[in-house]
Image (cartoon, rainbow, N blue to C red):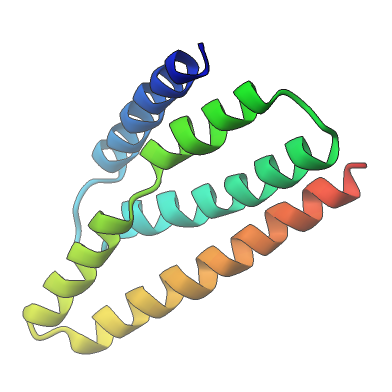
Length: 120
């Protein structure tokens, strides 16, 4: 049954990601992907810490972390957009995007972890 919940949550995560992309739109900088990956990193840090430390349902944890957040966040789009920025001679913008994505994602995961720990 866990597979079904992961699949349903994955569908919701994919639709959410697509909706945010359509809402923000495509500009000269991939704001939607950056927002999605940083908020997803925060959420994953929070969910995994919160569910693990409280011994909550592994099925719900898997549905949220693997299903929803796995479909919501996107490494492949991040890599492609960074490549395209560099390929179109916007190397400085590409470097900023990659750095902010990585550092922002790590900082967000750290923030989610600590927020979940303080909720105890």
